[in-house]
Image (cartoon, rainbow, N blue to C red; front, top):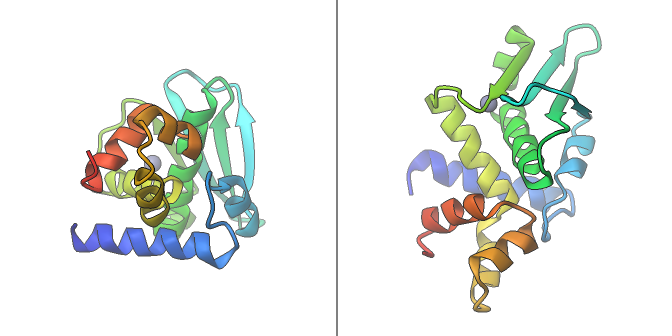
Length: 161
Ligand SMILES: [Zn+2]
């Protein structure tokens, strides 16, 4: 595991532990609330999964999700936008809005944020513990309230496949 990924594992674990959120499935709406971030759903274009916006007047962050997306996709998007909040807060304050689309170019920042999202939704220690109980990937995905493909990627990263 790279230094960056180790840092992201530790950061996401701490976020969960610090606010009594170290449980399955991760309550990421609560993580947004604790950090004073408003979460909205909007009728967005199919290509757009979500966005995070900084309001220069209120100094508050808001996350927008596509209401047409299925629940597990919305959860991943919310975790992804939270990653931008925790990792790139200062950049967001200058840019004011960051929009994520399905066909975006995967630059380093986006890859980092996707890693953050996977680690936040599927905490390493909790997942390894559940994995011991001979559960299928589909059962694990349901438990953690994520898609089967997100769970597969995460298990692969953790060397559990
Ligand atoms: Zn993004």
